[in-house]
Image (cartoon, rainbow, N blue to C red; front, top):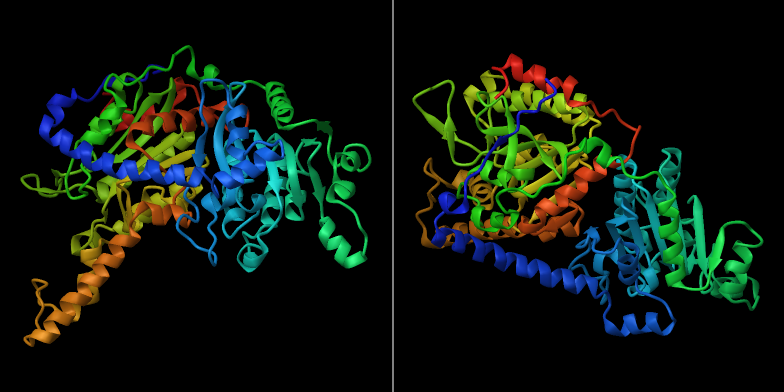
Length: 575
């Protein structure tokens, strides 16, 4: 029973799609991904070279330079929330990445969450959505018990927009509650203070286990300018709250260091003192092996047109180690693939929507559309999700879904109740779950497949993602339903009225299509990050290893006692 029956899946690319079709798909995807890369560079530039020069003139590093020095040699940071506030204007100003960099970073062999104020954007101020973005990163760290590092260089709230970031449940003050929750949860927190830390920026580091300050840094409830105005005292902020005060008098900081580089080296040393990652223990001697079929081929296998189908097993074959996979309950709910594979040598459960047509168990001679949840598929996902939760196996949800089945038969079969069972399961699971929006993420299917409202640890999107209740054309038809016949043709006989209806339907469709742009979702934090298809495997390696890194905070069962073995035996035996 300890043996997990992993079998080869997938076929060489040349047998999946012909050269012409592969090139067409790849060109379409690469055009979208070129936009992604260009926009990412735009965000990474902050407010531009002039502001980078200002930072350097002070003898300091920019936030992304600090991050680059923190990560292990040969590693890279996996940034999340890159496109928060993208395209949003505050009067004439922008706030690239909401003025804060948040990322997974491997430091001394351990995955950490780094939260760094972007000191090239209004001196690291908090803009609207900056607090929510920081809290999102803190929440990820708490769920995975990852060491959390704050690179603090923050002049407090961007005051002209304070009403959008100060009050409310997720206002700036909630950052400090998250600090406390991380501390209570036993998550290591280390703060490096590099410059201006005023008001909330001054509070952010304090609950951390270790606080370092450079000679240029200060932490104050109120800066010198405010004190001068209120008390007519001529002081500098360094006089009020510099390292001389907080290291040697108040005790609010632990160590003073001369410069950025020294502070970053100290943070690395602190991380080195922590327990090492448990990932190798849970690998059980199994090494990380690349898929037998290369991940970069995904860009030519997935059609950019969401109406075109593809083989879901070919996707899994390009994500799982050695392209080996154990499909569970294959004879139930054909519209869904559930199973287990290794990523980076570590077990993970996968749920992915099939595309095209699948069999209909109620009408054996007929087929029905996939990418839709029917009764069997819903029950299958719920049972698989429960088993993975019981076994401590992290779950990866690969969404390309149009929604639930509808109609008289669906209601008679009790899809509402089956769906409620799945919703309950995913709402109460405590195993780490990661969601990827491959293409369509529509209607209640988006919820059922652990979409953002069900609080996956992280949700990734691709440049092909389309997040909506329904497609633009469908919504246009629903909006103008009373003026259409049973074949959805306009019933108006007057030419002017017909033209008006056509124009109205076109406007609705265009607006909805624009709203489905993944950059819109990322801008308003409806998804965490947009990634290229070719880097999806690398992202899963990070996330799944992060789920196994910390020991003792959740049960991870050895494969001899997996509930999945029992489930497989009860539904037809191991395959």
